[in-house]
Amino acid sequence: MDRPAITVMAYSKDSFVSRKVPDLKSALQFAEYPTVWINVTGFSLLPTLEKLLDLRGFPSRLSSRPTVHPRVVVFQDYAFILLYQVYETQGGLKREKTALLLKDNLVITVQEREGDVFNTVREGIRKGEGLFRERGSDYLLFALLEAVVGNYVPIIERISSQMEELEGRILLKPDAALLRRIHGLRRDILFMRRTIFPLIEAFRKLRLEGGSFFRGDSTNFMEELHEHVAEVLDILEGQRELANSLVELYYSTLSTKTNDIIRILTVVSTIFIPLTFITGVYGMNFRYMPELTWRYGYPAVLLGMLGISAAMLGYFRKKGWL
Image (cartoon, rainbow, N blue to C red; front, side, top):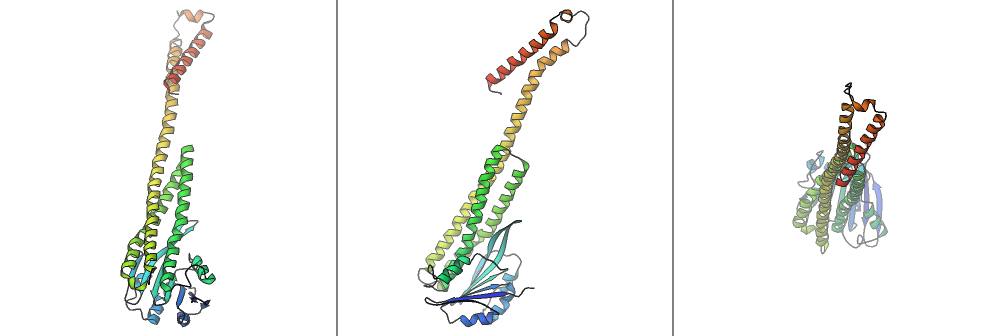
């Protein structure tokens, strides 16, 4: 098993330090900074973290479960948040469990693997951009949560662009491969919705029960985060309805094309009915049939059959059946 990776970013308004450390005890040595962000790769360190920070009631067992709904647990001296980052892979959408802990001036993030959506936050702290250096750990927590929610948006936008592409292709030529892609997008939408929907209740709980952890107008930032999640869910709901509409459009277009084929075949069959009757009459081989001895009988019958076909085609076109 790979050794867990631990990085520390500690900063004040005028100073900043970032480095990798061998263990959590070394990371906590930077606690004299006004704001400290400790990022841990590997949930195996949660019991150690619980002991070092004396986290009473810490839900480490909750974090160790393979699957669990996003949630917020607020204690007297710290708040714990569990949610999921979502990534696009060749095999489809994957999600990674991520835990965030806010205690005093510490923000601790725990991930399942290396790589995350927090690079914008790191760059903002490193370059002193935005409000990171001016505000404390509560704003850092908001920024990290906003980065996770913000990462959902480009994934949803790509799903929307794919559905727009499929709509044009369905109208052009519906086939089974397109239907499979539509169902794949529907699964992605449901996957995103199951991941994001619990955040509505989780962030509401954080805003209401965790008010003591947020200073000044940081409460407004949390309300903004709650609204952002609601907006993302509204977009997903619209996408779900669009995906259902694409399925209906597929079957409607397929039915229309099938009806066109049946109509053409019906017209052809109808035209051949009188022609078959004529050939049937002259195929009876009676001895006394005047046309059989007529010199121009054969071309006359052919011209008659051609005239009947042309007349029927003209009638069908006039009626709009062709």
